[in-house]
Amino acid sequence: MGFDWDDASGPRAKLDEELAELDEAIAAGDERAIEHELGDVLFSICNLARFLSADSESALRSAIGRFSERFATMETLAREQGISMAGLDIDGLERLWQQAKAVE
Image 1 (tube, one colour):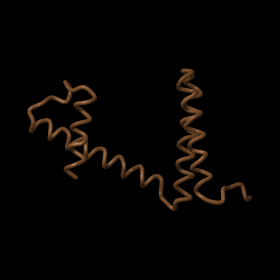
Image 2: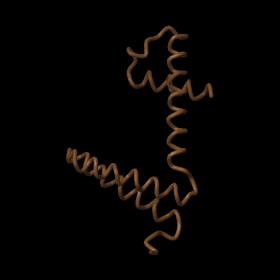
Image 3: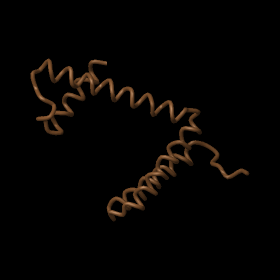
Image 4: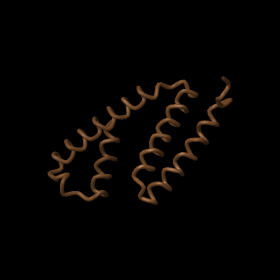
C-alpha cells in the first residue's frame, strides 16, 4: 500500500516521538495512557528493527540472556566479596553490574 518510510530514519524519529508521548503519560500518571504509549514504543522499536534487518524478538531474547548472565555474575561477585546484594543501594548494585560486565 506504500504506507511506509523510505529508510530507517523514519521509524527512528517515530521512536523519539513515541518516547516523548510515553514521558507525558508517565508525568500525568495516566495508567491507561502509559500502557497505550508503551505499546506504541514497542511497536516503533519493532518497526525500526525491520528497517535494520534485525529480528526484534531474537534481539530481545539475547538482551534477556545477557542480563541474566550478568546478574548471576553479580551474585557470584557479591559472594566472593562477602557482601549482600540485598543490603546494597543502587550505586553499590551499579558497581557490581559494571564489574560483571568487565568479566565478560
